[in-house]
Length: 507
Image (spheres, helix red, strand yellow):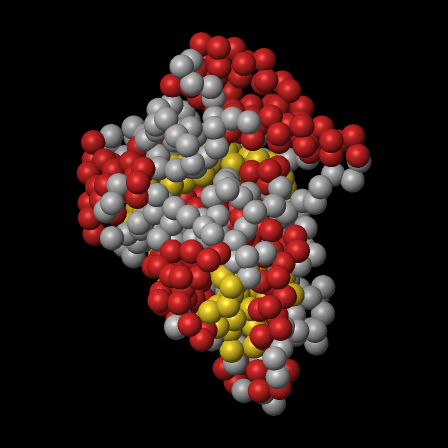
């Protein structure tokens, strides 16, 4: 079996079925497998459909689509996300003329190297389960720019996105005229998000940094909870060449008197974070100490986890995402929400377990070990640095039983490409190197030269066009009967994954 699939023998509309009863129905099967599948099916009954529309398609109304494209074009004319002038001067000026919308609601601020978006989605789902209205700001987007700003778990409607842009545009132009540099693409989007959240209005904002922390455009909020996902080497030209230096930049999200939820970190990065927390009198909760993953098992369509939170233990939680890293993200998200509610410091109680189970069972994270096709199975993962690639490789090896895995890799030119390829080398039988459509993409031939050094010439195929690369990989996976259980993993960049998603009919 190359792809885990939920059983269709149980009616999920009957929540009264107990875990033991379902296990009893499976007595003719392997006992361990029966328990895993029964647990998966039981806990799925707590959840409805996944929250919102994860990746919206283009607007069906031609006028709306045209207006959205016009906004996208205007935003694209500004400094891109990779060109930075490290300060919050411009965004602070924009917030000032907008009337400080970011102070109209409490916020949870998320930094780190890997896992930020998945963690943000989990935090959002948990807050929604307790009937709080949420705003979520994440980056980059997989396919649609509107994904970056979400209300109540769904991307902002195109009409509202356009309206928000038009509302703040005069103020953006006012700030542009007063500053040495115009507001960047990311700064304008950040202003739009904060304005949209205030206008909604939301009860709480879940905000992911764009890069770093101290001078990131998002860092004009006074977050009561700061979340730091695992730190590793990425954006080293801007953030520093060691985990400690990168942690120094990211520690800027820790505000006076806040609570810091600290995922497992390299020792030097943790030391920097703890020092900053002491300086601002922040409370720290550390994964592996105050909270963490107690147990986890592979389940059909994801995994079953038991999490230890700040307020106690939460058992038998079904998480419909693959990989140990997602279980750790879930522990971080749970601790962040507990901290937001004052649990652990001010209150010694647990959150409602049924609400927690329902929230986690509905979590979706597009482009993170996401299955988008079967026969052969095609999986997408947005890993773009060595640590992310290692997590993805471990996750796919654990959750899928591929007889042979073909990689499709398209990266950006400013990444540790060799490190990423080396992380995938043990699991890829062959790799098809390609490039996405952006200017940041590494040239396919240049990428191939590195890939040959890592994989050997006989395991590397070059297809500069992504559509050709996908076709070549699928053909290799279907090559002959010997490889009936083969699969394809598309990875290397969020952009590559987004474009592949569209080509495979998921847009």
